[in-house]
Image 1 (spheres, rainbow, N blue to C red):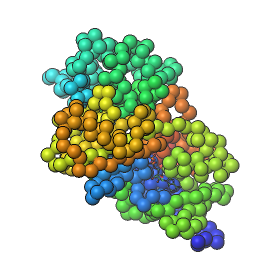
Image 2 (cartoon, rainbow, N blue to C red):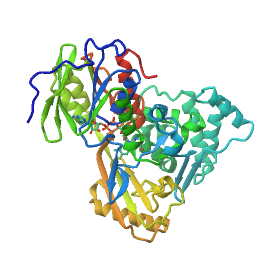
Image 3 (cartoon, rainbow, N blue to C red):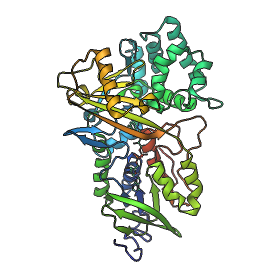
Image 4 (tube, rainbow, N blue to C red):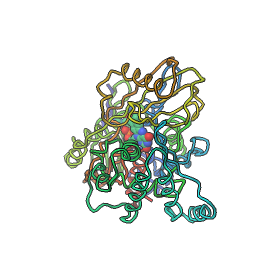
Length: 478
Ligand SMILES: Cc1cc2nc3c(=O)[nH]c(=O)nc-3n(C[C@H](O)[C@H](O)[C@H](O)COP(=O)(O)OP(=O)(O)OC[C@H]3O[C@@H](n4cnc5c(N)ncnc54)[C@H](O)[C@@H]3O)c2cc1C
């Protein structure tokens, strides 16, 4: 065990050069939130040091290997309205056109339901294109696209389609803001969305976006997502399916960017304590072999670790203990991903396909998306009966569903179930999410669960990181 006896003043710390405003930041956690903060600060020539406890960057959105195949710890999708994430991926050298399969919104529940954003007839499509170029987020034409989509959805009666369109119009009239938050289930009932309509249309959207069952989900957060996706411009509702793994997509590139801007990224380095010293911060960290290090002094620390880790670190600092209690009060929801590797010829009818009343909620054809032929990812979001099954049983259930619903009679060559039991916070009405600032002015908090109007997503993680970086300069999220 090796302990540095005294904290050393950091080279870029207090009294640092004018270019970096005398700032020198520690970032705890190399997930999307931490790396977003690191990039935002590096872009302003602020030296940052990232500490990531795992061997690789990415946190809950990371690449993993199984049987010589590159997977993710869970199949993720992005939406066109994830502006901050997409911009940052571009900033660190990604190419959105190459990195994603971009599809116009299409929700298909196999043989049961289909909603598509239709192409607008001329000259309405021109109005929309001009409005997008002018930077408008919602236009009369974009609303028409979604209303047309709802009115032409297949698998619903005329009355149901009309009811769904009327619901969207009612939401637009109140600008997607509820006077008081309630559950998504209650909101749907108040607006006469019958059980079948809710099951085929709104529940899949709610579970995919909020990872929380409609009976528990916050109606207001659901409306925030609908406002920016279904009610936004047509590209906002696009679905982006990644062609590269989630560590490579952003965090690895972000680490290169940080290094090129004079920063440092430590992996396999877990922060064990935050030690405030007046207006500086020292960290205690352990490296892979368990050796304990005391770091240099930093002007600020951004804690972008997982909620459990952040609560643990904050609990030990008296001024931060109330924030730790707020984090510890959050409940969590799981996401299971079942990867099935079939022989190369096996394909799904769409890159992304839903199942009505299936164990598997969404299926992804990794062959169509990323050239990984025969690889299918089945996603099961939020709490449910699947949690009671052994992984082997769950995989067999999904294999059976693919056989019975899609006629895939072959047996997979291998399968892998990845259960993220605390995938996201449970997004419930009126939740008090912790702020980015804390009672210590030089300790900030980032992460998908911190204050914001989005559910736990890559976009909310990235926005929180940018927001923390902005707080250093007393700016908000752009
Ligand atoms: C299976 C699954 C599917 C998902 N699907 C989607 C989707 O389709 N679309 C979407 O937008 N979002 C999705 N999400 C949510 C998304 O992945 C998260 O919102 C996002 O990755 C959270 O990022 P974060 O940086 O806030 O936290 P994390 O990713 O949890 O990052 C925290 C990091 O801190 C590190 N750390 C923890 N403790 C310490 C310590 N003491 N010292 C140093 N480092 C530490 C961790 O190792 C981790 O890397 C999904 C999540 C899961 C799990």
